Amino acid sequence: MQLLDGKVVSAHFKQEIAAEVAAIRTASGKIPHLVAILVGNDGASETYVANKVRSCQELGFQSTLLRFEPTITESELLDAVRRVNENPDMDGLIVQLPLPGHINPDRVMETIDPRKDVDGFHPINIGRMAKGLPAYVSATPQGCLMLLEYYGIETSGKHCVVLGRSQIVGLPMTILMQRNTYPGNCTVTVCHSKTKNLPQITRQADILVAALGRPGFVTADMVKEGVVVIDVGLERVPDASKKSGFALKGDVLFDEVAPKCSFITPVPGGVGLMTIVSLMKNTLQAARGK
Ligand code: GUN
Image 1: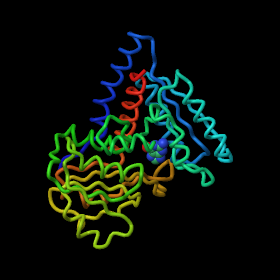
Image 2 (image 1 turned 60 degrees about the vertical axis):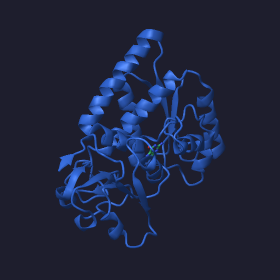
Image 3 (image 1 turned 60 degrees about the horizontal axis):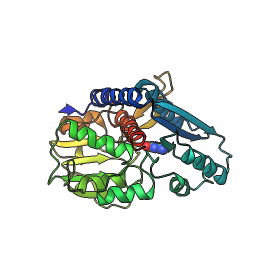
């Protein structure tokens, strides 16, 4: 069993990205600029956004965090998005999800200028990705592909089973893994809450992507020997022994599944670290596109 080590891979790509940011700055004086919109104060979202802002500082990007009360109206939020769209100094925009229930996330995503949509959530970017055209690919699926690529894992002709059909991870992952490119060319099965005989399907997986958001859902009896497991889950589970009061758990019961795997991502220290790197990569691309 070998770890798909997000620490190693993200450090590699961060170095590359920081060097490119410095080169752009020297050549043109331009500093790639990421804007994050955070509505309300959901604990996990606060952590994710703080990590994104910290990564910007670390890699030499400019960042702006726009915070709004959870009572903001949808139309006020859409206006804030439009102001970022129109600001030529702002290259990339993310609106952290989830949003409060009275705001339609699809309307917000559709309002973001697709050229600044570094999360890759706009229907134009999802459509372009599905067609294999240049597009912003959403950060977490792209991070998974970067791990597969970095470790040179063969994907062609393999059976990839994706657990979960979220718009952020499951759906794009199924599209990306069946594309006629590397990493890709898989036979893809997507499983969700209505899937019958799920363990029977997961046991057929050469590559298993777990993106359900259910801590410890995947157990050893659900995978075959030699499987490659990518655990996208990152849930806060109460843990009195931790200073924060919680531990981060993936969708896979690591200790019992790992011995059967050829490769597996740890949680934390796997996909989560790659998500930020791919967001930075997309923001760099947005800045270069000017
Ligand atoms: N919430 C959970 N994951 C993500 C993400 O990748 N982007 C945004 N904007 N919100 C999220």
